[in-house]
Image 1 (cartoon, rainbow, N blue to C red):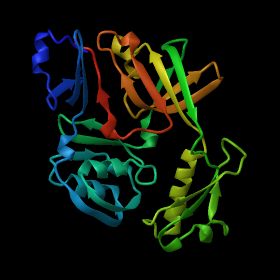
Image 2 (cartoon, rainbow, N blue to C red; image 1 turned 120 degrees about the horizontal axis):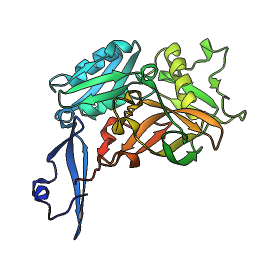
Image 3 (tube, rainbow, N blue to C red; image 1 turned 90 degrees about the vertical axis):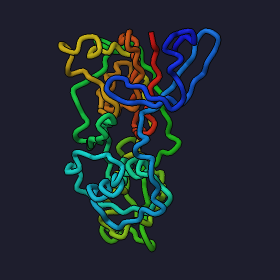
Length: 297
């Protein structure tokens, strides 16, 4: 938010660039009112939007190969591809490099996250086992308020999985074309997943387990109003740095639970870090959705 009378306001226009906290953003909307203008910007990924693949179809390629082809000619590079050993197939049409990068984050693809350094045009790869850290939220230290939302509209405990030409997992799964996950509920609630990319039962089974693990528990999100300790004192609380896509431990004393969830959104008040909020969820967001909405003083 900024006053329309501010000298800096004349510099603000759609598609202009803002640098904040070591990241470039592009202004996407301006809502000007009499005393205040609200400016919203999106992380600058324009360098991944400059070309079109009318077809991106490849059979069983490594993550390194996929990223190399997607980023070719963009000026961007990627680090940490060695963390991913899986091979997957693509069947995409009319996509830009950013679409391919986002596709790689799917749990049934390479299941990666990216820490974006768009100043140097680098995508730094993280996988779930490298995302966890020692940061925790508790009302005894840094958690001021907790808002909870839950939904089981897509909930299932049994998944029938089919690949190309009716391929099933029965041949390597004791004759059963389905798998079960009763980690949350003993109910039998069936769903069907079909994906023509799969030609091997072993790959289909491995990814079916990942997909079922995601839907066998309710979708949950927590909005945490916190005291951002690292922003207040980076030296004393260096272990409490909060990054998007990292895994945070939430100690919910009201429900008597200790939960590990992914940071999908941060709202920062640069001059008042005691008012920052963090959204945790079981469903990570795509990198194109990272926004900045801050107050200029």
